[in-house]
Amino acid sequence: MPKVDAKIESETSFSISAQAEIKKYTSTLNGEKGSALRELEISFSTVDKNHPSNRGPLIAALLKRTPNLTKLTLNFSGPLNTYENCLGDALLEALCNLKDMQDFSHRRTTSARTDFGLLTLLKLVSSWPKLREVYISGDTCNVYGKDADFAALPPATCQLESVTFERCMSNYEMLAPMFAGSSQSLHSFEAWAMGHKEIDHIFLNVLPAIERIKIGGCDHPSPKFIIEHLSHAPKLSYISIGGNEDCNGVVRSAFAKALSEPDTFPALHTLAYPGKTGTYKTGRGPNVREHKHENPGEDELVKAARERNIRVYIADNLEYKVEGAQRRAGFAAMGRRGWY
Image (cartoon, rainbow, N blue to C red; front, top):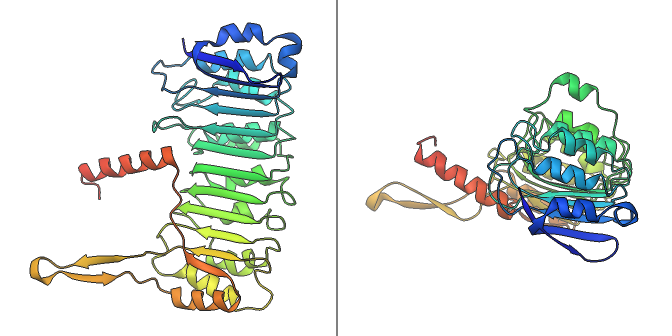
């Protein structure tokens, strides 16, 4: 049985970490005390090796005692139920019943893979009409879930303000309905992205309100979307596109072209673009030569941005502490197997 350590921080805030049993506090947080609770944090510092894990049902029982939560943070890695169903049906049902939820976070505690799941995420978002902030550390892949399951979901009505994905590995077209009610509210989007379809699907509905976009990984808005849509976002003041996937300079060229047009990017003050820095070597022995990385389209972009008094520089590739450790370990394993 997972151990927890509970400490009442106030009458409306409660945190649980590793020391005593969840069941003890399921019986403690009942009646008025449970109904008065507004913020809850639950942490598991290790991965449960049991399959299925009994952590999900235990948390579900606790959440039934706290129906008025507005902020919930779940810190865990690996599944709370099974690898195919990360949260499990009991916990998912208990979460969906928290109709006052405004701020939900999942943060990983180890580098173990955590398939949070796109279907799970969309079920939660569509069940929380008051939701404003979302932070998801786990993979938002859509491996588990049929097309019919996604089609049966009610539309999301919440007005999201800030969304962060540490591993956005979704089909972006299927993820887009999450933002259906956020066209006038979403001001910040951040993600390490390696998904399917065009990431443009996410932004198309939120352009009127978006102020800050930060993307790392392998994906970026398409050149056509940058020129025809993103450049006309009225409040967009900061954009950072990390990674080095823009080998041919199409993203840099798209930004340069958009910036050369009048009345584009009316609020933009900072632009970080994809590119490589430093040098690389070729040859062997006495024939080794050192070369500076070239980024096609960079000069035109920098010139166009500076003429508009926009701060411009090469973006750092977005990396989170736990996710970065996992990704580096994965790349090392691939190297040992000779995969690249």
